[in-house]
Length: 169
Image (cartoon, rainbow, N blue to C red):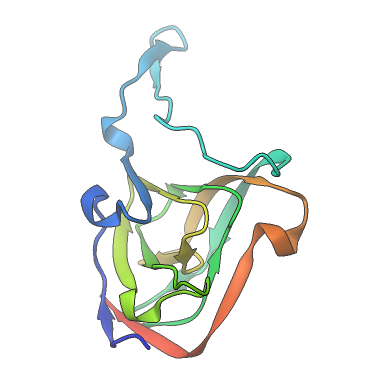
């Protein structure tokens, strides 16, 4: 079982690397577009996925604000595809991840928590157990992209925790 409460650290690429990628959107290189009135900044990645996934999925998530302390009640994972979240309007967001046990369940003793800020995007690697996205300090709107098979039970596995894990800010 997790040692609690767990304090959320600032989100950074080095600490998050075992679970995925952090993108600093302000530092992405760009090329001029729209008669030189803007820059197109391509994301430096392709979402990894297995060949059993059939189509890309893009959605917008609108989330109500949550506050610390936050109780984690479940983790989810997407075994067939990486999953990208880009904040479109968010003051901050909570990211919590857990390593995978040999039996496939989340290792609750290894939970890590991070606070992301506007201008940071994340990519969860396929199969990484993570907290469903949480908006902090105000409502949040996020762009989500991943590959899906079309079978909701295969695309998203949910693990309900035996007791809540507390995350503090």
